[in-house]
Image (cartoon, rainbow, N blue to C red):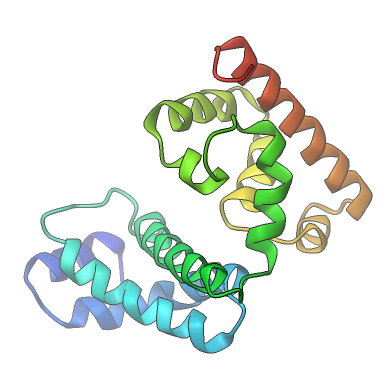
Amino acid sequence: MEDQRIIELFFARDEEALTAAEKKYGGYCLSIASRMLRTREDAEECVNDTWLGAWESIPPHRPEKLGAYLGKITRNLALKIVRRDTAAKRGGGEYELALDELQGAIPAGGSVDDQLLTGELTEAINRFLAALTQEERVLFVRRYFYFDSVKELAAAFGFTESKVKMQLKRTRDRLMQKLKEEGMMG
């Protein structure tokens, strides 16, 4: 079913919207949640909560890209679970590894994920991403937004893991330099 039709079903408060969204984007959302969460049960719970989040937010929101909208809901819900688990000393996985990598490229003052929530930093990062080549941008976003592992990225791009690590490091270094130029880092 086309995205616009699914969105219309949400606006009509037709529960078929949930079934159609799950059928079309369930695997995608589960993939996002699984990369961030330690257990399959948590990932499945997160995806189930995604459908509720979509039901509660459409309307009034009318997403331009339904898949990206649902992916963002899933990611935000998974982040809440990670924070809960980390507070209970149960955290781990690609999420923490990716944020540890970014730690040096993001200004000090709170955790990296807290920093990413601030509008000014987000705008600066978006400007930086827009200036990257498509390959650099996709690699960066897949690592630090979707939390793909280095191994997964190497396979997807046909690179060695070493090349992926080096390219990500160079991009992080360029991000840090850009943030320094914009006065966001000392």
